[in-house]
Image (cartoon, rainbow, N blue to C red; front, side, top):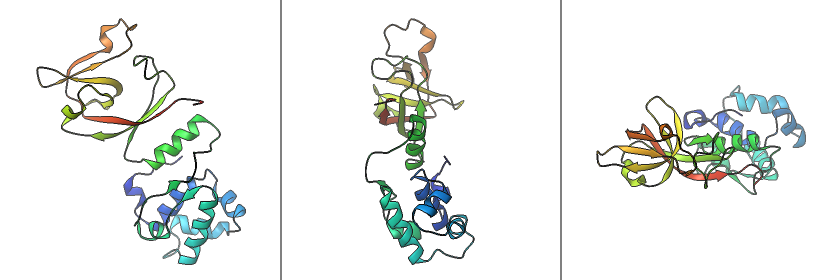
Length: 203
């Protein structure tokens, strides 16, 4: 799935494409299922027309709702109102596809697919976590288990501990892990993200 940040949702064409991609239907499937011209849908999404007509937007909004995506016409037209919402839990074919949908819905967040058991018992290998980053005042996160971005852009899931030096120690919580190198000391992170989403494969 494409990566949509705020800068990639600046036009009505991009917003329509973003909403359609949330259905997990490709352009041809979406157009055929809802009796739309594939050529017209392509021109709307690619910006090959000056504007998308309100009639066309309303047809797409109705089709999107049938796929469980709630979106206001004014969001597509002007970027006003709320971004698309899911009417029901995400229906996807696999965990990777689900992660892709979450990344699209929260483009300014940080996500991490966990590849180890260093943060047991709360987080295990294969889990997916997402958080909203902050870039200063990390002390408000003292003691929390966070996604941490280091200066070299490495992502870690660790418990953040403010130390006496005004810097941070990054701790593993798995008591069975004996390698001290996995804990980091006197670190000033580039960013810290409090976890708001934790998904478990098959959960």
